Amino acid sequence: MRNLVLIPALALGLAACSQGDGGKAREPASAAAGAAVPGGPVSSDAVYAAAEAGPEPFVRALYAQYVNGGPQGEPPAPGRDPLYDRMLNAMIGEDFRKAGGEVPTLNYDPVCACQDSGDFTLDSVTVLPGADARKADVAVVFTNMGETKRQTLKLVKEGRMWKVGDVLVPGEKPLTEQLMAAIS
Image 1: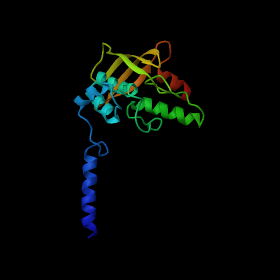
Image 2: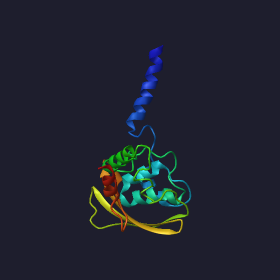
Image 3: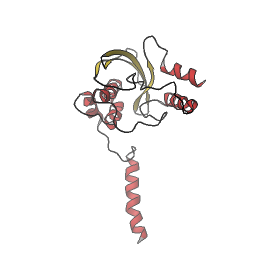
Image 4: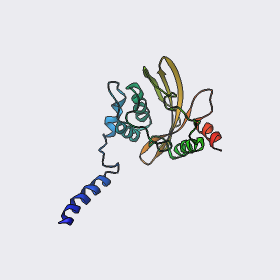
């Protein structure tokens, strides 16, 4: 009798694993391209699907979260954000570890260049020339709480997903350089 209970449980577990995303169904990438349309919360799944669609849909979906009130749900642990590449995640994780409970170098959200977002608009997204199959630079202009900000996201493709590898803000060192200085 015990085997009869284990077989369906095992089948369900294998089915969840075979989806590759913890059992959650994802929206098709084409649905994520429209995720940047204001009107409601943007799910993490929509951002992940857009990350598979290309650099521009990914960045639009990423910022759509802020247009619609900010990222939903519990934030990932420092150094474990699936929207950042491996190297940036490693630097962020080490920055928090070295801070030892004090304020780390990265004490804000680098995507919105803020600690809080409100009255957020995405003004422009431009994929810069030179993008290839594995790397792209995307210039972004947005307004948060009345302040217009410009930055360039350096994207890298890891597997099927585009991820943020660095954030460049005019007049500042790249985020990776700031983190490297803090953890060295």
